[in-house]
Each structure stands twice: as structure tokens, then as C-alpha cells.
Image (cartoon, rainbow, N blue to C red):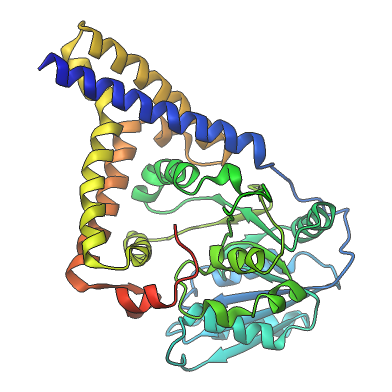
Length: 386
């Protein structure tokens, strides 16, 4: 029994220390930028915003974008088969600002994901040499696009991604978002995103600014027509074609009300299982889920064996875990109160992931943005391996 406690305590300590190192390396290599309305765009930017059933947020989000008065910006909103008043709201906004044009889609061709198809149709209408792909519910403050373009030019980058600040949302999102961010930091090795000698790249659906010429060299969005992780895929194909990618955080310039209802949250997180590619790999993921859950919770459970040595190790690890979660929340502007409740955050995140895994195993596929896709179809169009 004591040996088992030693193994669990030490393994869990290594897990949390590894996450801490991953966070520190990310902070050291991924800068935090801020919007600056005094900076002017040196070249025009076409902002392409796909939107589907975003009626509860599209007016406010697009209003934030349009508050940037730069004449170098054009806005292309693509209403992708919405069943609510998204299209009508966009048309009303277009009447108030001539820089905004609205495209309404009634169908999606076979062999394309709806969002990627909507983005491609936006590209067809764009007139500028820089393209900003940004989800319809994303708020982009004045001066943010100019800062991104200036940084891209300084870094000689072909694509720049900004991570956003997440505000509001259902309680499960606020409770689990810090844990999700920790997984991204370690699982995606974000500290390598700005290194040209590493294959790791990162894109962000809220804010991906790319040179049009670089996208064309990469073969265009047709390369991503069935890529669920289209945001990361955009960066991947640009880099594969010889381009350079850069990642920064910009919580004051880009923010979203991500998954505004519990239903949206649960449905939205299902798409990640498409990367498994098969039921067998999903079952392996389910086994890994149990292992990671033990490693995450061990520091807070082993205190029950106080004062033997494994419990002392666990207590020390627990302090490291709380400090790490609070640091992640502060760095990425996430809910601080929930970040301190590490076991609760872990359990909430684990429950969301478990649901997604089980549904994908049962269905043999995923549902995303109102469309159903088999695991085989998602794997056939895959450009990104996470």
C-alpha cells in the first residue's frame, strides 16, 4: 500500500512540475501584446467573419470590429445557413457602414466543412493583400489589427495568431477553462509556436491574420476543406509551404463570449474527438482519461494519509498546482476564482471530455456546427495532427 502511494505521489508530482515548466516556457516565448489605436495599417486588411446562428452576439461583436474606423479595413460577413436572425442583423449593420458586405449561403458543397467553405467564399470577395479570419462572435478592439500587422512585418511572419480573452459563459466553462488552457499549453507545446526550427505551429479561430500571397502559395483553403481544426490548419499549411508563423496573446484586443450556453459548450467540445480517427483510438483516449484524472487529483486526495511521506509530497504538489492554475488564469485573463478550485476545475473538465469521448465512440463520428461527420471523413481531410 505504501509503495503504491509513493508511486502515485511521485508520478503526480512529476506531472504537475512538467505542466509548470510548460507554462513557464510558453510565457518566455509567446509575447503579450496590446491594441494601439495610434498605429495605422500600412496595407489593407480584409476581415472575413463566418457566422452561423450567432444572432445573440453578432451585433455586439461586429459593432466592436466596426468601431475601428480605419479606411484600410474591409469587412466580409458570411452568413452560413443561419436559422436565426444573424443574416438580418448583419444586413442592418451593412446599411450603417459601407465597409461591411454580407454574403448569405444557403448550402454547403459535399466534401467541405461549413465554416471552411464560408471562409473560402469570403476570400473570393476579399480585395486586400492581408486576410484576417475571425469567428463571427469575436470582439476585436480598435488598433488590434494594426498591431498584429506591424508585428507580422517586424517578425517577417506570413501568419499571426492572437489568443483571446474569454469572458462570461456558463459556469462549467468558467470552472473548466483554466484546466483546458493547461492542456493546450502542454499538449500542443505552445512554447515552440514561435520557433522556426520546430514543426509546431498554432492558429486561433478568433484571430488569424495571414498574407494572401502566403495562403495562395499554400494551395488556399481548399487544402482545409475537411479539417476540423481549421484555425491551426491554416497556420500549418502556410508553414508547410515555406511561410513563417507567430503566436501572441492579446486579451485586451481580442475577446469572446465563448460558448454562451451550456448546450453550446457541450456541443462545441465534441469536435475535438475527430482527431482520434477511429473508435480504437477513442478507447485509448478513454484509458488515458482515467490516468490523467488520477494524476490531476492525487495531490488533493493523498492528504488523507497525512503525515506519511507520500502525503507530504502530495501537499507540496497541491500548492504547486494551485500556484500554476492561478498563474495561467492571470496570464491568459481567465476566471481567477475558479482557477483556485483546482479539483473542481479538473472534475468539470474531465466530465466534459468524458461526454465527448463516449458520444464519439457511440456515434462513430462528431457533430459540429449543425453537421455530422464520420471519424473516417474527418481523418481523410486531416492536415493537422494534435
